[in-house]
Amino acid sequence: MQARNMSDVIEHYLKAMLEAQRQVEISRADVAEQFNCVPSQINYVIKTRFTPERGYVVESKRGGGGYIRILKVNLRDDQDLVSAMGANLPTQLSARDAQALIQQLYQEGAVTRQTGNVMLNVLSHQALQQPTRDAEEQLRARLMLAFLDSLRYER
Image: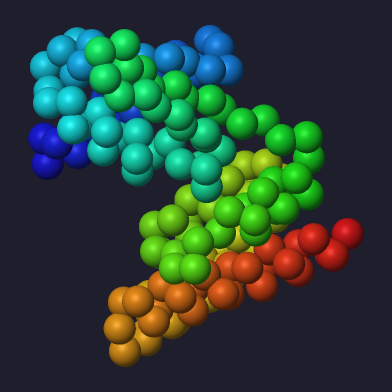
């Protein structure tokens, strides 16, 4: 439980930095030292909470002068968001990543709360129940792409 709490703290810290500026550049080692954790904890937070599905672009350079750059992406309108999501959708999609995508669509006004809830229910593990995790994640990705395609032409 402690690792999760530390991840929440680190995420909050980075998001606070991003509120002040659109892009931040950090040293993984410096942030790890600041929070008295291992550098891999910083990697975990960035990999799981600052994803394109959540509206972020992450660039990194390893080595002595290495850095991690996090950029909050501001799209012009919901159609840009829908197109970007469709173009970057993986062939397999976890329930957690699907939830993050739907949350982003809702926050940007591309879907209503009711539509988002329908999407969440359709893409849930309980609704899909495939024989393997891979099969479920592939089906979820295809369904999400179908949802995104329908959003492109709905207006």
